[in-house]
Length: 212
Image 1 (tube, helix red, strand yellow):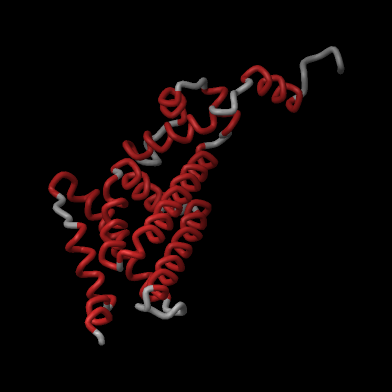
Image 2 (cartoon, helix red, strand yellow; image 1 turned 120 degrees about the vertical axis):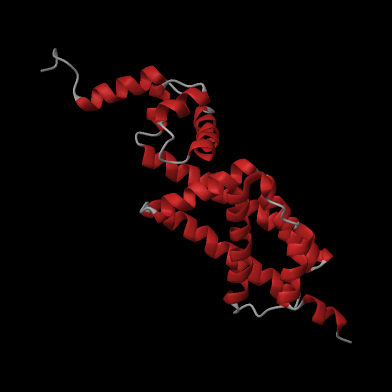
């Protein structure tokens, strides 16, 4: 009855009101979650550890993310969107300098951020292990990256806008370099300029420049 204990919906609303998370708490949680995931991996990252790293209560975390799957999906969204924006920015700003310098900037940027690289590897593993929502979100970004590379190469006169294979090649090389750096750790000696030169040669940049 009305004088008894509140129902489930009313109780949930009361708990949300008690938590009263501020507008910035979601961003704090996501930033902390990405850091924890990059260090420990998706499976080992607990919601309690993430709440502690973010400096928020568990109630605030559960208000925004009632499940770990929901949080992991948002981590993937944040990570892939930020990486896509940065790749697009570099392609546009460095494209005028020619393909080798553009590719060198892309390789350097992608390998420079260890937290981002680790997060990416852990999300790939999560997708491989059956998290379909994460896989689908990453697939959207990968397709966008391939299209972006093809568009930029077409603008430089090095590929047809219909040649998805060349875009897949560039993205595969960048992906592989991230994996290689994570595996080799401090023993990694990747030369961004050498990788860029070899990839440019494979894509036909020297031949195009030598033509009359």
